[in-house]
Image (cartoon, rainbow, N blue to C red; front, top):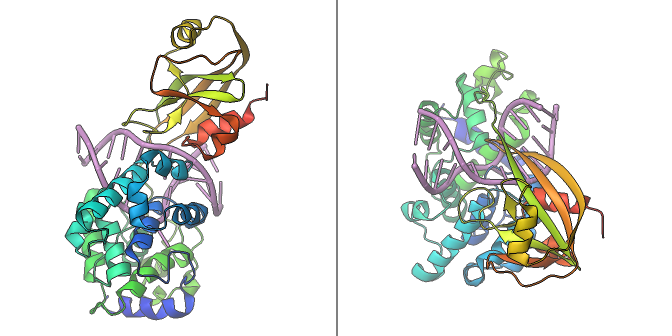
Length: 347
DNA sequence: AACCCGGGGAC
DNA sequence: GTCCCAGGGTT
């Protein structure tokens, strides 16, 4: 398979993607940001977030000097919020220890928070023209199909093999490594798609085992199924005047660092909670509801009580705050919380 | 090796 | 509803 790299580089010239916002640059800051946002996230989803982000944080020093809260605000809705926290940590580290210049060393890149082997490989190729392999969902799909690998690509032993294949298939020189790397991603995204691959347009079809044996439906093998556990949480949506009451999530766990609603074990103690934390007896229950959402590893049923208070008194707790309705759109809230608030009737 | 971590696009 | 996406970190 020594000529795959040449064919891919040639194919990319006429048929690859050339106009994504993070292309046509070697600025490691812009490339790094795009790679982090694109982890487990589709291009179409990233586009608007990326543009907003570079407008607000044009360079790494500005990002490093920002409050983590502000970074999370621009990440709100994108998910996997550890990416945003690690992004901020890395910006601070580079600003401090590398004079705000991205390190070109692969090992130093790999040591930074949020940058794993594949992301370090992509940054190395795109920003520094270094010959390093990547192994994302696209590459896994292209290689498992091309070679007829029938096992799930996420299985550790298979993944190890795929890294070796990705390394072995790199171009001989680093001259076109950025084109090659982009070509692999583009082929996976536009031709070697998960469903309905466009095999007739594929530059690799003459030697692709899945194409020749008609295995593109079976390969790549899907992840082994597991029944997801269901979690129930109980939230108090407390409204007073033009604001809602929020509670900051802990630094670990789901939605870490974001703002959610006060959470109870159940609704038996609602009155006590309001008395203890807001020193208020007089409240009105406006609505009771339920919202379902689902994550990679569990399902979540959010139960909520929508409560109205006449006065917004001072809180005892320091991890709570009121947020005005007009500010919700730009606050660091998880998507389901924003959705629930949008369904509530105005008081 | 298994689990944790979001949200949405495409079907 | 299902599956998976330019994966990384933790245990």
